[in-house]
Image (cartoon, rainbow, N blue to C red; front, side, top):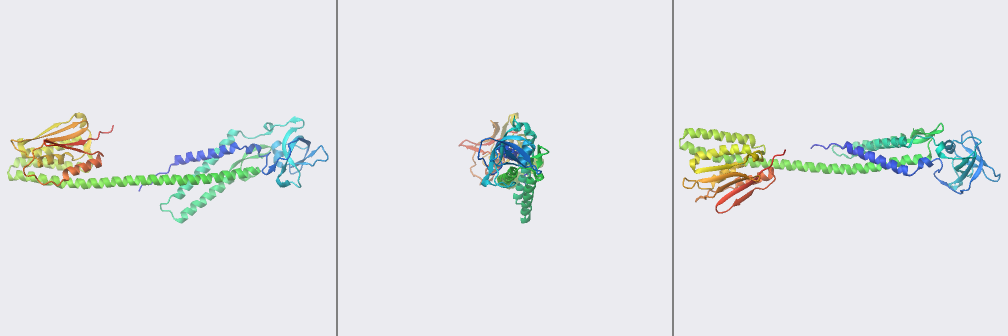
Length: 444
């Protein structure tokens, strides 16, 4: 069975949407802006302003010695020194915070730590002045493109892993390993913001010198991508399997219809051949060689039409009428001036479609079930009314009714249902018999 092609475009759209969700949600929480000020685990204890002079250590962290001798020094982290671009001897007006539990990794004792700088060296302090960083647009593009590519790769791996055709256990293990590797690499190469040389830059996660919150953000993004990619792959493969089942059912239905049609066509040929041999035998018994030869020529044409068109399913009304005229000629030779056919078909309907060999059983049944004599000739009308082919004849019932197998009309009805998808209609009363066959209008 033909396998459905993967929807690469759909995977890309979902990956881009996932990246947008991740990064927009991330931007709603201004961690980047506050990551040098609001450290994870800090608790604000007091909001009053303090003043003092900054002293830096060789490791670039420092302490602010307050003006009040009874006050403890305030710790300033390396991150804050770089973020605020502080220098030795700066006089600062600031607020303080204390770490949770009274302790903070990176400095001794229970010193309070710097929270916000209000003034520096007598001037109002503003982050907008010192925050030398890439534009929001560039940062946003980096984040969107990177996580879209990782999301697309994860989605592709999850979808491939869920395909079951011909998959052994080691295939699943291999894809699981690839997903783990991609997730680790996604964390390792994630673009984050970091201070370098006194300014903020976009760097890779593995380069370090990033804030603690960046670890949490990158890990959260990666975990979110894994979960959403797995769920999407699950839903996508279910939909793909469902579509595959629908296609397989349609193919089975088509094969079944083709088989049924071929069986019905097999019923036509013996039935028609039997009637044709009877007519030819009559001519041979009458020793009318000229008409017998002509009859054989017309019979040859009809069989050639059956061979060429019998398996094609449908044909145009024009071709079917040409075949019908040859078939009618065979009966006219047999009944001479006692059988008449009135054919009135508008030219616009001659290219409409119908199942091949539709006229043969109707013409044959008309002759078979009616008395045809010089005093009581038979008239058959073939016309099209509003896209419906009508074959109508007067009823001249035979005194000795020939046994009917029911193959002809039942066969025609079944073929019409299979090929055209519309039912035929039989109209019958004491004086007339008519079969109405809806034609299929050709597509432009």
